[in-house]
Image (tube, rainbow, N blue to C red; front, side):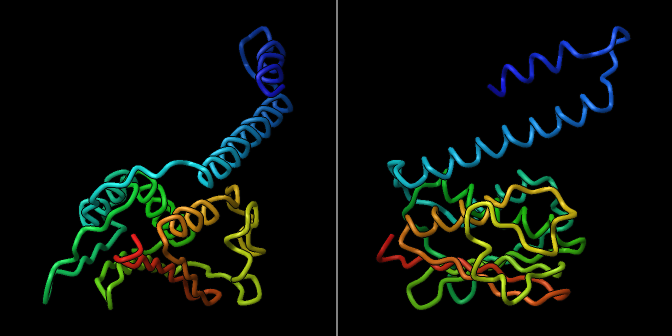
Length: 200
């Protein structure tokens, strides 16, 4: 149905090749709906997808996240090397890349300042924190932000689908880990991922 709508929108273009404002608005909403449906499908697939387990170097993975987001000047990456380096973790590299990319992208999206990404090896766990100084999340909404399609009451002026943190939560939980979100309005947000090495 959405493809058919797109075709009809193309047919409604004026003879000069310009798109009428009302048609352009409809096209934008159709594009949003297509993006949302793709996200929901990805979310559903994640719950049953077979994990392709391999040894993952976390520092390499986080460096790739920085490269993909093309904003190195806004991301401060701090990976533990002293007194020892972080050991690799076993997991699905592609899915872990999606999870950490979403977390860092969120930080960039809702904050105009530099964000910090810290990775540590603590008490048998891989701990990765993504810290921003953005608009934050109201305390009463913290338990809702990982629900499908939920968007905070203070971000309706910004584009988004409400699926990013849901994807992250499912990916991390499928690796035997946990996603923790701490935030203060107008101060910022800390998203922390814990994955136990023995569980992975």
